Image (tube, rainbow, N blue to C red):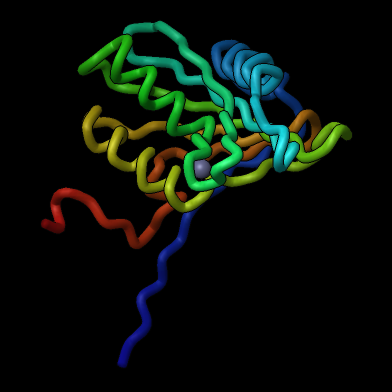
Length: 160
Ligand SMILES: [Zn+2]
């Protein structure tokens, strides 16, 4: 038996002011998208925004349904929009923000497992890493260099 160590680096920022201007704008777009969340059942709002390789940005929010399995995460809605509006264009960065309840959130939350797998597919499709920026309404901001950092032992088309 031997052990295999898998490590990842999360860059932690205390303020959006420490980020690049395009990253600050992307966080702001994600926060504005969060206001469009339809989440009457969980009251957990998620907003996401993507910067594409062509310079365009798109954003989306989670959309719940009384039939819970039909709910659509903000990340999945965003990725679907990206490939529908700009097919074949790689995604450079995605900012994701969340708020549970009515109080501002003060910590970043990571995407669910389904979203991680969906994000990985888009990273592989685009042929370049997608930087992931996670933030609440305030507090620390996490930045990861690749979706693979969210899903270290991933499954992809290369495994088929
Ligand atoms: Zn999700």
